[in-house]
Length: 591
Image (cartoon, rainbow, N blue to C red; front, side, top):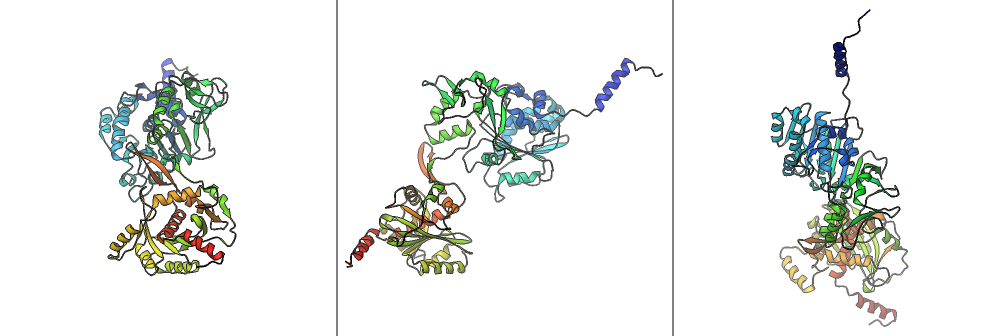
């Protein structure tokens, strides 16, 4: 019989067996709790990282664990909440647990250098596991490299989003884009920065991407765009009184949300279900029981939204601090936008003069002939591959009947489409037409040269510009232009749009009212383009000013309506005199 193993032999067998076993996979949050060290350079609470101190980060971080199937993480959150620390933990985890080529991008080369100095270098030098991985002195050498960190099994590239070179000649399995809303909308002539950066991960089948930022303005915010293209998770917390789970919302216009007393000396949260007051000391208990709930379930991409309302006590502004900030923020649009972006982590919806496109479709009507028209005009917008034309009829008091809208396809640098326009105008026989001369200018001038009732026009932005110039001023300017062979009439964009929008908001038919026919040309797209801009109030320093902002890519029907109005004014048509003449004719008193 074989003798049983001795104590020393048993110990050796146990060590060998454990050494032969595959190492258990850590999650990112478990790795951070075990190894991450925060320094005073990057945290108000230096020392060991504790996920329990900021429990909302656990699920977000674990999306990038080695055994996770999540490929894309979008984090739209308030400023200075936990976005960067989450990404640092993800990077540190993959350096030691699942090495691979990675790339970290911030908006510019300069901001990336600052990010590395204040955020990445302290983690490399003060987290023992990473410092040991890089070999002591090499950790310091790695920290001194501005463009990359080389580590066993992988490399971390550091790049600026404003440089086209950052998007070339690199293949990575993990991509991190921080402060996304400060990236340029277009990278040189290359295009969208998110699309370009994603191309760097195409060589890897299991590539992972993280996008993080505080949002800016709806419509132009990159992080908001990416968040909408995700499952849109929000953190739901239980009410300590009734147990109802709900996301924390500011609630300026709702019964629930953050409220405070008249002296702003105390603040609390009102539960949307039971109406009870929830105080700051309840937050640790609530945060520990949080649930991330997808509001767009089934989407393949993970999206997370978090605001400073969720900050653990001592790690961000208190609810009372936020109440004080709100009192100051509501004094101006710019400070209010800053509060919405940086504290609530929400995109700013610019307020201003606008028109509801859907509501306008309720104006569609079957015209009763004959219409009481006193003049007919056309407004023509010139694009590279088409002409768009709106035909209008005008009655007393500039009551407007939109008669038709045509699109003539064709290269506007060639004569064919202009010949088609000539035929169309001959059929309609307007009193006046205005043609945008901002594109293919020479073709517009040539067309208008032999048609005295056709005006080549050019829009001018600015609140002080009239829809058309005073007749005397216009004659003087045109006299100077004739010497150069150019005759272009200026149209005040801002005032023309303001007048059209004010008339689109009229509810009663009569002077100024704009009618639309029940016709296939006047569909959803027509009205979406007609209402594609809005007047917003902005600040230049401390001085407010109004500016028209385009909210969608196409606005041709609005431009056509604007030019048609300009044609009426440029032709000097006196609608009231024509109305009197029409009345005399109707009475058989023609002079």
